[in-house]
Length: 334
Image 1 (cartoon, helix red, strand yellow):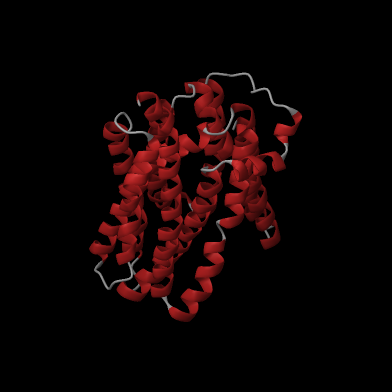
Image 2: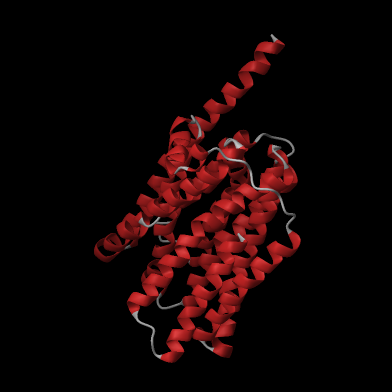
């Protein structure tokens, strides 16, 4: 995490420096964006791996940490656009990228100063190979369904968020305030869901049960987004879907991490992030031409269909895995 943030800070600074000097071109901007993305995959995989390294292998502890971590992330994601807008008006868009570069430095310093150091997990040479990560995912009965389902589901989310500005323009005219509220609605709902999960669910139910029981709260509201509703109705539906996301996300991330043996986690999590990054842009490629040709309704219906299929498959395999885990206890009781 420290290495990635230390690399991303000067990369981000390249953009305003070249802009001010007159040397910023589109190919250079693409190259910098590519490099920033290249450091993102190991960074986010390290974020997942570090939690059990610090807190141990207990599902409840890791789930609670994920809930708090995601709540903090959602909060900054909500505050970031607001702060960005204020700073753009105050110091200009280019200077905001300098602030962004400084945030990477601040992150690296905070992690270096406050996160307890742990020795690297010992790995066999074969554990460091990408094909070992792919092989593990293919052989695990839960993750071989979960990760493709979540990757495709997130691609559908990407398509939905791209659709929001077009939806607002078509239904409510040029109104950035409504678009901003709709974007913020999901984060607000996710914060509420994180809080409910942390306070009431994690100490009463196992993670697979939480996922299977509450994923419907995320999926069901999106089936109504294509209807001609007022902005307040759309916002309420997105908030409700966000609540469902916040309810299940901490547990599913904890389960996904802890199922991977510690020596293989760095490789498997990096493999997952790379696969996710390859699949996620599909939402953009598919949504753009459909929006251009047919408008928002087919995209919104397709989004609901993809979410229903992917989360339905993830739920079925979660229930099957939960029953498999309960069989030894049931047999012992019998």
